[in-house]
Length: 460
Image 1 (cartoon, rainbow, N blue to C red):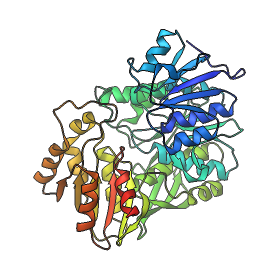
Image 2: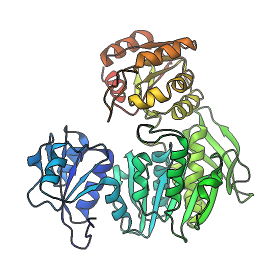
Image 3: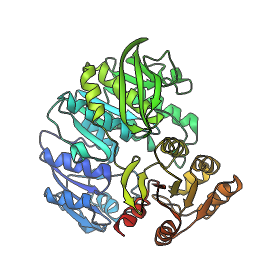
Image 4: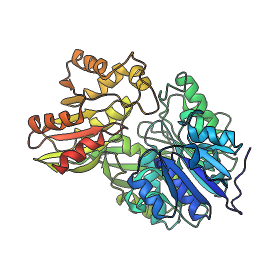
């Protein structure tokens, strides 16, 4: 196995450098003295930013992109062996390292490495922790799966032992990590193009928990079904949090929402009232995310006033019920939700936000997920008053020919939902302008490029 020498920075090439995660680590390693090059399919604001840092980027993937003196080629799990740059690295016998292994090696340089995992809520919780640690002057290094205003991007390079990042279970990536503190927000079925089902997913999270050292900390949602099975065998300290389990170490009671849908609650720690908290983000799901961030911060000795102040400045992460603007009296939001539970949580929370009718433009993400959760998607989307379904965003997959957005439309119509299928983004924009009225709320939803619809509407 190749080991990155952080005392003698070398020359690295990133295949797919424009991704939200890869770009952040390219920037981090550049700041540590490594010479980084990379390739991506298209120019984007992210790649332009990387180029401004002196990183050479090739557009389009070709064997000739890899510089002759490259020490290591880094790639993501989405890169196949027939990728021309991957194949060239193999031909030249260059060391190859999947992104997750690289992250794990970077983490070893931080004595307080916090990894936030879960099927949902990773980006929001990581962002909340960012606000808290910055307020507490902890000078953390941050890697977050979205653009965060407070750090002007998706990466922050600190000069302390504190590291905060997301830890994704897909392809068991997080099992390459070396956390000293870990968060498990929730465990549900997802990524069924890799996992066989919920039991295999639970086993993956259990293995993740067991990565923690004896003096580490595991913060886990005690509302997870039989969470003790996940924690069994762990020798580290365990702290639980919940919005439903009053026996949890960190419990939110007296939960209420204001007329914007933002939550407040009373926090009990080990059964004793600590303080009241007011959030500037909507929904019950964000109270749970907040509890996880509070749990980690409090267990690490951060003062309650710093936790409260940090959370008070958090107004949401990029693409998480993000207000984009208004056109013709229609409020336009965007949300990254692409799993039935996420969709239900966001739309339920949105109903508490001022609006006339709630519209949702949904772009399913991957054929595997759409097929596996077809009926669940229909149930979750039915929370909206009006639903527009567009074509499946393939992402890493090829069309198998046995599932389409029209199947989802049929499920929605069968359940009595007011739904239409429209393939073209341009036709969707015209439909919205003809049918939405002053006071309506519109949410573009999905992990693909559906966000472009709202942004283009605002340009009109």
